[in-house]
Image 1 (cartoon, rainbow, N blue to C red):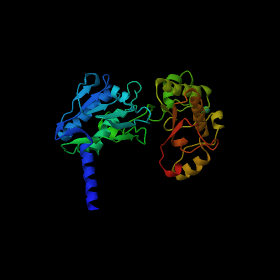
Image 2: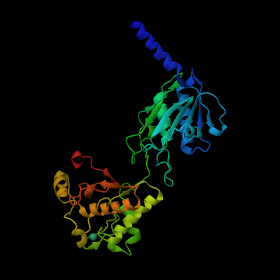
Image 3: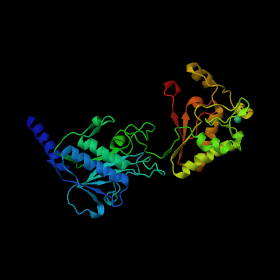
Image 4: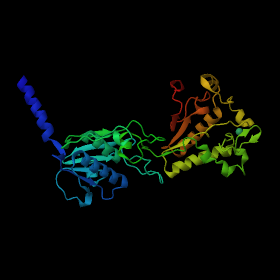
Length: 367
Ligand SMILES: [Zn+2]
């Protein structure tokens, strides 16, 4: 029995040693990194990360070669949307967010991620799965760690060899589509992808509060004061941009603004009330609900607001989302559960299925 176990261990040992795809052996480069001839800046950057961190770990510098100029033999890392990946049918466009695949076929390790362009100057706010594939390779097979957003938080173990199992077929799909607001690892850094501090979808955000973007005071107040909330008998010209939400033109402008963002290329767009929300006291708005002044504490939130939700805003957002669902069926309307919209409507049970709600109050009772 002992002999059988010994033979088995020997097989396992020889199996892993003989049947891996070598990237670095005994401190010398074995593989090269092949990138598409028309590599975008993200793929080029990711190739640089692999080259630099492999060198930090082993001292060996892997060559980075455009695919059309690659005349090398032996092991290679094919990064991003190479022709070789297409021919080998290794793809990632079927994965969510910035998902990626790490696959070995023959003497090639394919590192392929779902890549999309961002909107305008915020090009990094989109799925960049090839960057994720590169950092996943560095974490898993080189032991690199980005544990904290400081130079001391980076760990690069020293080693002589790097190899990858030749039956590797790994799919990585992150649980979360994005993190924004506090990008503590910076943007376009390996640590940001490794720690999921990145936006892997085209999200239009104005810190949540988009009413002032779609119906700005500076543009409309002079000609249309009636678009703005009636407060103490005056149409408000507060910089906080409080709106009269039963005005049909206000509803139209919010809808047009949101649709405009989808037409620009965003997949999700935020629709939410101005920060420091003040209600409009015009008869039409007041007739929609019993929401009155904002209060503090549990009694207000879980009794007063729960029993008297801000229907005027909740219904407005539901109606706009419904119209977006018809015009842009593949897009998402991103609402805030925040301030007056913390508590759900008592007049309707659910938002349409194109709505995503950001929970700003993390008290479990709000769920
Ligand atoms: Zn009003």
